[in-house]
Amino acid sequence: MKIHFITTATTGETRADELLAVAIGVWDSERETCFEMRYLAYFHPLGEVSEAAARSTGYSVEQWAGLMPGPKAEIFSAGAARTIADELGGLDYWCGANPAVDRAALERAFERVRVPFPMVGTRSIDTGSMAAPLALLGTIPSTHIANVAAHYLGDAPERDVKLRLLQLVNIFERLVADAVQGFAS
Image (cartoon, rainbow, N blue to C red; front, top):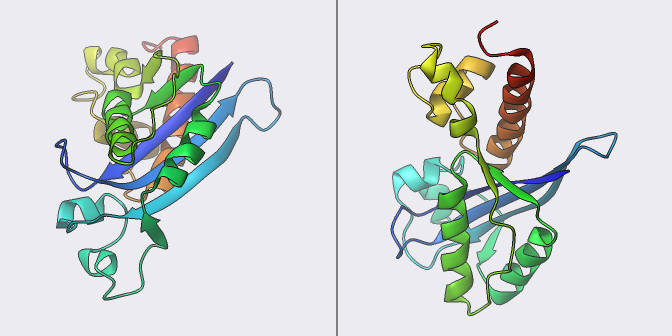
């Protein structure tokens, strides 16, 4: 089974917001090394980047504005959309801390550059939903990714999308292990 782990960062949470970063990795149970990072890119928005949005990428507003060394980024283009579409090909499952939000951000970005969003599987795995038994047992206060990360990793979710993606895979593997062993043990 292949699971695509996908995370994005945007300039905010509305339809007008732009994509800042995308990270895609594939977890394949048939391979000896289960996880492979497949795609990582940063994109300069046409508009300004807020402090919160900058933090979500691991960089500062000054770095996004080009006032300090920052991410090697390009404007999101049709070429970038096609590359991402190729990476999403053959997707069985889409896993993320909130896969619906990441998918919507990508769909909006594709729409802006007039590239059709690829027909990919709609089966998604939400790590928050996977952690519901922990919340029901009172082990964590809620299924928010910050609580799940603190429980399994002892710290908050990473800001940088690449590190956040790797952290997400680690959390997923631990949630699966707990499910196999039984959450209540």
